[in-house]
Image (tube, rainbow, N blue to C red; front, side, top):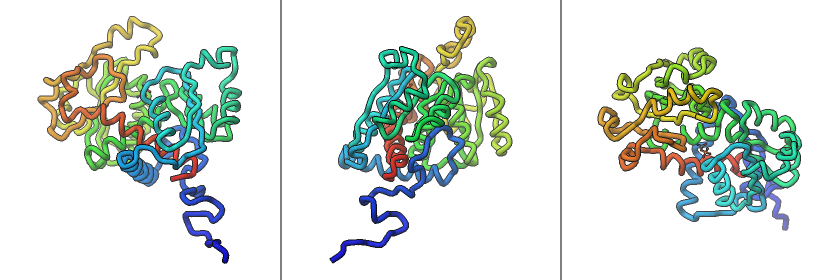
Length: 330
Ligand code: CP
C-alpha cells in the first residue's frame, strides 16, 4: 500500500516533516530591518516565542540537525556571536567559528567576497559582522547561501533590533501607544538606527536624547517623519522620563571616533542610576544592547524595570527563529 500523501499548503511530500521550504524567509538574507513588514514581525516573534518554550521544556532539539553555521566576525562580539552559536547548537546544528579574522586567510589579504564564497562551501548559512556599512549586502551579492547581518559598521544591526522589539513585546505586551526614549550615542549606534526604523511600523512616539555631536542621523529622522512618527530631540532626560515606557540606553561608541578628544567630551554624558529611576513609571523598562561602560550604574540591576539582562536571553530565541526560518524549518 502506498504511503504517499498529497501535498498540503505547508508541506511538500518530498521533504521531511517540518521542512517548509515555501515558508517566508527560506533561503533569504537578513540584511536590514527595512525588509520586514509588520506581519513578518508577528511571524518571527511567534516562532521566537515557541523557541523559548522549547528551550525551557527540552533545552536542545534537532530541528537543524546536520546544518552548519559559519560565524564570521571582523569586529569584536560577545552576545551576537555566542547567541548565534548557542542558537545553532540548541537546534542541533553546528558552527564554524571565525571570531578572530586575523587568524584566518583574511590576514593574508583575502577579500570579503572570496571569504564568503569559501565559507559557503562548508556551511548552510553565514552570520557576518563587519566594520563597513553595506558589507553584508556586498557579501550577499556573492553568496548563494543566506547571509545574516550581525552589524555593519555604523549601519544596521537588524537581528539586534528584532530582539529589542521582541523584548518590548514580551515585557510590555504591546508596541502601539508606547513612548520610546533612545539615549546616548545615536549617531554611531547601529542598534538604535535599526530599532528606530522597526518602531516606525507601529504607532509610537520616539524621543532622542544625546549630546549635540551624537544626534540621530538626519536621514533616519526624515524616514520616520515620512511615516508620520512623532519624534523630538532633547539634551537631557528629565524632560521626558516621566512619560517614557521604554528607555533604551546606548554606549558612546569610542571605536567610531576619529578624534578621541571629541570622545572625551561626550563620554559619561549620561548615567542612569537607581536615583534617576525615581522619576520613571512603574511599568517602564530599561533596555541596553550591551556592553555597557558606565552609562547604567550597577545599582539599577536589581530594579525589576532593568530588562537588559532578560533582553540578551530574548536574543537567543529570536536568533533560533531566524536560523530555522532561513533554513526552511520554521
Ligand atoms: N549587542 C551586541 O551586539 O553585543 P556584542 O557586540 O557583544 O555582540
